[in-house]
Length: 402
Image (tube, rainbow, N blue to C red; front, side, top):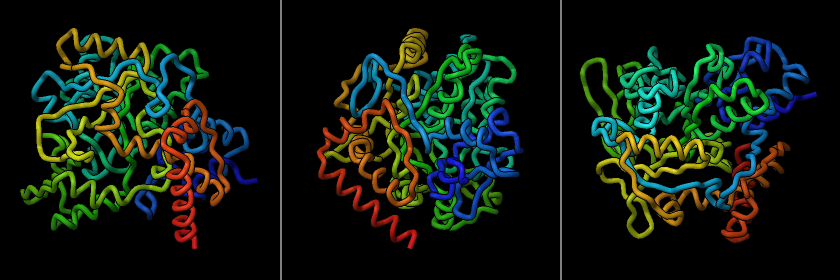
């Protein structure tokens, strides 16, 4: 009998988060590997047992997303305590972050105030400048070294048992799906709750294939073997994609071209079906607080500004403390501002149920989504856009599988 995890992988619905590779879940030397498609996928040394498959599927955000009920929930944006815009008070942190440096400043504050021992987050690999990996940062300099978005595959939720092995308190920063997997892992393990001090996420439009990065390099007139350092974003807002070559060249591409015309067209299938692009499982979420003109975000270089959402009392308290300590500069915004700054996320949330209906009919994989208020969101957007997206998704998947 084919297990649920195997079905997810065969249907090309895997997110590459890595949660299913935790050693206390599966006992077969599981690892994550880059496939020919340029995405991370789990590799198991043998077929999973029924028990292992059930445990792994309970963590898999492609197979299951179950958000616990909370007091204040918006049908489009999920749990919300407060909506703010702001930036890191420290000018260097603000400049080096992707969108105002709020997450970096918050993590530095938690470390330096002694509330956590380390931050688990994704940064460029030390052995491969084009690869991304999870690391544990314990100092301001280590956090800043990993500042800036990484628009490529990264198993931030891989080997989750390693984060808790030392007994230390930590904060976690990852994609919405990574945070959802972490919550599923921690949920039934009461002994771990005190170690996870804060789970932070960022607004996510999806994970591009590593081939997308190679496409960017070709457009810049270089190739992977020539790269010494590579930044997708940061060092300004929105910041330039920047490649530093071994022979001393510095090659740049603006955000609109790198993401809008290259990377954003290389997304994995599951990301196009994502019901949670705004990190509804997180305590705190940050994203680009885009300035807009005629309803469209503007991408000229400015001083960084973050959209900051607090979703839990824990997240709200952490933000208020960081503001009081002078680490963050913030102002209150309205819920309506979110849709102006992140119009893509609004439209996606309202049509995603239609996309999933088509994908499930095509693949036979029916994920369990609870607590995300997908039906109210679809009703607010109207049934016709959702049906159009369902038909479009079904046709595209039929062509790709043909």
